[in-house]
Length: 413
Image (tube, rainbow, N blue to C red; front, top):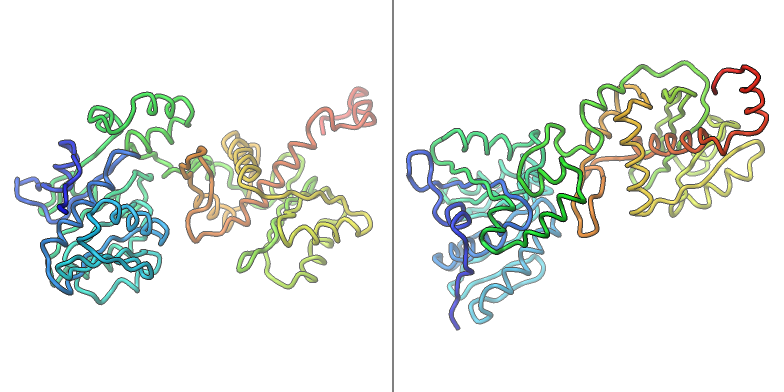
């Protein structure tokens, strides 16, 4: 059985197989900013396999992705792409050994220290915009003794990452680097992607999301769903006013229990963040919240906690169950409140968590989530408080006594 390289369109070929630097010389490191589904992965699978095919027994070739699950995707795709009689595979760790003895290993960049030590003869860095910079530093060291080449690929994800910065150096003409961009239109022209799919994505996705995912144009906010500038505009000292609602996110594993209270103007006026056993957590919530309405995370272990809180005298506790759909709607509501400056909060952990949020494109749409490894307890507590306040301010929820008082000349509550 013989290996047949997949058919690549011209821009794929130039970016992956024959990259050149500003002087027209073969470039050791080729960087490709690409929109989704433009063929960057299939091209790099073919390139890395062919690099290893030219190697010999014991030589290492690596595919490195931000997380292990992404590395496994490339591992499975390479096994499908190459003839079965040319290799043997190992599942743990994912590894392909070719008939010449060369070894292709699929690794995660989650723990950069684990990448040091080996001599690597060629490598692919996948989803580089989501990769920790320390992983790139470690991988670069493994290519030093061998002078091995690398193909560095990824979707655009804002401007605040090492991949974006290195792409700008390559684009400016730094020797030894080659810069390329593959966008949806290139894939459509090559017959790799259907034009109607792109048109549908343009119709359904927020403009900033579409531009990053399909046009490879970075947003100034780095893909943050709230907006970095909008977050900064909502920073105010903790208000010394009376709470009208609380939002509580309960600790899971190594997370924090966080409570945030808003006053009648949407200003954060109380902020609690702590870790501890459930009995002390229960008492802390009761003493902080009192009789103020509170929306409390009731997911998983939070369900019995909410039940116990509701049994306490004078408490006004409602539970909120987090699911993929309910959390997305919760965060969308928070995004609106932040962008319209209907809420304020102090600088510190709340701001840090909000700035660490990003959008993720999935087969069911766009999902808002904290970046890999970051906490989201403060963001969830703030979102719960915002949701509870929005509910309370709906006209249908205002009591007849309040309406009569307002009609008689009382101020708007």
